[in-house]
Length: 458
Image 1 (cartoon, rainbow, N blue to C red):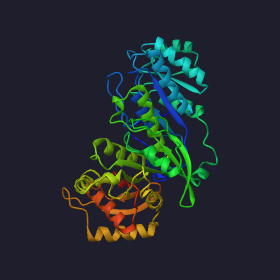
Image 2 (cartoon, rainbow, N blue to C red):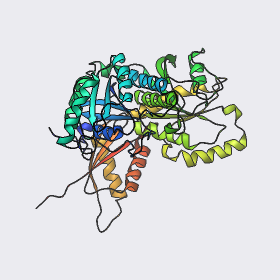
Image 3 (spheres, rainbow, N blue to C red):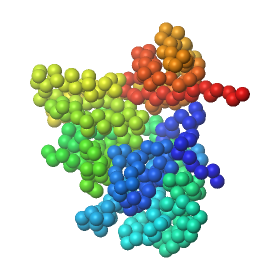
Image 4 (cartoon, one colour):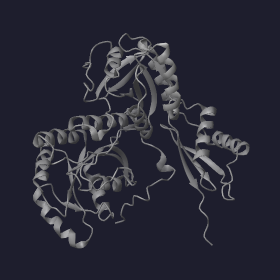
């Protein structure tokens, strides 16, 4: 069995195309410091989850795309359950039940060098009650000697424990095969859902008016609205007809400043918000026009960009913005939103409905950009002119060139550039900027992947 090497992810041109249908979800659960994040990195094939040798390190982003043996799935790293937390039994049950309910299958990670703890047994009861398929990973099995210590884990009653070393990759292939066997097969009508109602995630800090916006769009109070930050906990799907078509809106709990500062209840609300963004095609980031654009707002933008979703920025409470605030807001937009200048922006007031009707045209514009495809001939004609007029700067006597380009996928537009050497990050940004000037791409991130030509060995 070939082990899964995180340093060598699959990145062929064919693999760049993204399947737009829903993919199965795997929740990774376990006590703190059993190596969940290291194992997540092993599964997803890249070092993305934060790893620290400290119990209870939580992450800003908890959902990751993974692919094994040609099958795509989403990995949700749930963070460790702190044994010293107050109200332990209640918090373990509440948090584990929400995480497990979200998933199609569960990877339960235990530390083989420690064995079964009371904590593990408490979680096992919840996993059994859920009825979800469970794969048991015995982590930190770095050699043959340690493997013998995994036999005692049969006593958990979850079936065969898979001995793995998240650090070294030992046994990860067999574990991944077991995960695929536990996850449901993608339904054949997955592509059909892509053609259904467009999925819109309403995201933003707590108390910026997300639920008020949804209520205004729906024409009735379907979502609990209170002037207390964080009233909404679970995403609420609403089918709403606007502009002659049906849209699926996902209202989400307000993303906290940092997930690690949240209590267990808020932590999982944040987790579900990340999942809502992954489920959506377009994210509407609602900002309070009265308040300065914060680091928190920018972090949410980054989450949307990393997920590859189309984006609309909506400034709420515009009726309360005076001339002075408008002046400073323009400066904040130039400074804080410079990375997403391509996103359509609207100003509205959810409370009164003023200019809410501008949302649909902005959504349509973002979706059109998100799904834009350029023919290979048109793209290479554009690249040829670009390189001729603005060649790459010479670096250490070398001047890399773009030899050929192709659009591997849409949603988001993903381009693969075959080059004679690695392009500077600045030149890559220049290409993206010119792509937008030439072809639009309003409302969508653009992904550029480089394939530098390898030198032949003599």
